[in-house]
Image 1: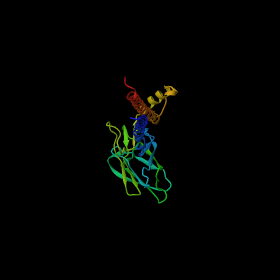
Image 2 (image 1 turned 180 degrees about the horizontal axis):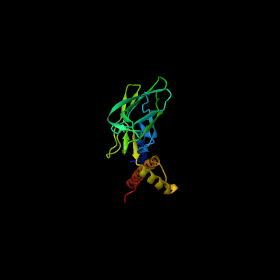
Image 3 (image 1 turned 45 degrees about the vertical axis):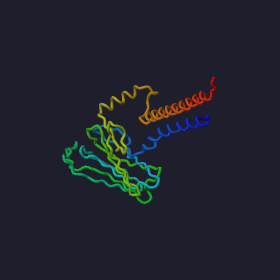
Image 4 (image 1 turned 90 degrees about the vertical axis):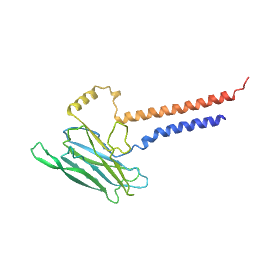
Length: 239
């Protein structure tokens, strides 16, 4: 075996490891809700972020389902230029009493945004849709199942609910809800933590990805060194 062949094999192995580690990041773009946490019983503004994942089609319609098993009484939409927004309501199985004593028998169950001819989300672009919600229900999370329609007629269903078995292939946007006491405790913990230790979940995920990338490169280089040593032993003169 020639030394050049060993070197080429080591470089190819390193590149393959790096490509494998980079693949999940490239495939991770999906419909999300931001921020992804809020407080039970309060009002919040969330943004549904919709990236276009197709090179040959534009996103022309976005549909987001609002759960009604624990309904949200107030749903308000911020206009988006070039998009028409409509809502659908559903009759509630159990009416909701407001603080004013009124009885709510219907709630918004679906929001649909439709683009005009010039405003569809093009390839490598994204659009954001703002919604005001409240009062938020007394539950741990709200799963907003979403449908993304492309100009080709394809519909991508972002409807997979969170599970302990790992990341879903088409995860639905999820808004985590905390109790007021939990929020106070979290704020106190954050203020007491050292500045160097602070970081967002995104930075933590980036740190993990970087660590995996470095580990992959080290493995590739180790394979290269092993190949070189094997070559030298094979080429050494025998007594």
